[in-house]
Image (cartoon, rainbow, N blue to C red):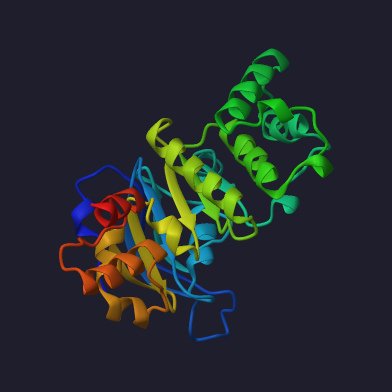
Amino acid sequence: MSDNKQVKSIIPAVQFKDVVFGYDRTNPTPTVKGVSFILPAGKYICVVGGNGSGKSTISKLLAGLLKPWSGSIYVFGIEQTKYNIKQIRNNIGIVFQNPDNQFIGLTTEDDIAFGLENHKINSTKMFNIIENAASIVNVKHLLGFNASRLSGGQKQRVAIASVLALNPKIIIFDESTSMLDPTAKKEMMDLMVLLREKYHKTIISITHNMEEILKADYVLVIKNGEVQKFDTPFNIFENEAFLANNNLNLPFNLELSKQLKALDDNINLTLNEEKLIEQIIK
C-alpha cells in the first residue's frame, strides 16, 4: 500500500485524510476504510478497482453526496463541512453512467440550461454559456433536439455540456463510458483529455476500462475500501503480480508489446499505440 508522496508538492485538487464510511453503521466493516490520498489539480486521474471496491463510494464522498463517518475531505485546500458543502459542490461536476438518467429537459438546450436557471443566470448570458459549452463537446448542432433523437454518446456529450456550463474545476466521470459503443467510448476518452489539456479541468474517472487508463496521468487503485497504489499508468501496468492481485488486466497494446518483446528483444514496452506500430514496421 502506498500514499502518493510524489505529487504532494503540486497544489492538490482533492485530499482525503483517514476517511471512513459505510452504508450501515451496524456493520463492523465499513465500505471505505481509513482512506488517505492526494489528487493533484489539472490532471487526468483514473480510479480503478473491482466491483464493490469502494471506488464509486469515494466519488460520492468527494462530491458531498455522502458524509464520511470520520476523517476529512479537502477540495482545493478547503475542508468539506456541512456549512460549506454548497460552495464545495460548485467546484465539482459529475457525469454518471447512464446518459438516460441524466437528461432532465425535453431538449438538449433545456438540459444544459437547467443548472444555469437554478443559479439564476440571466437569459442573454445563459444563451452564450450554452452555446460555448455545446461547442466544446461538439453538440452545438444538436441544440434544440429532443433527447429521443440522440445516441448514447451524444447524450453523454450533452450531459458533459450541462456540467461545463457551470464551470466546475473538477469533473467526475462515474463509469461514464461503460454503456457506450467502442467509437463513442474513444470519443469520450479523447474529450476527457481535451478538457484537461485545453480547459485545465481536473478529471477524475471511475472506470473499469483499462484502455482508458493509458490516457490518464495517474491511476488510483482501490481494493476492499483501501488504497492499494497511486502511480503513473506505466508503473501500474509494469507489475503483473500487482495487477493480478487487484483483478486488473493489461491493456491490449501493452499485452501485445510484451508478446512481441518475447520474440524480439529490440521491441520496447510502450503504452502508446503509434510508437508500437513504428517499432513493428521498422
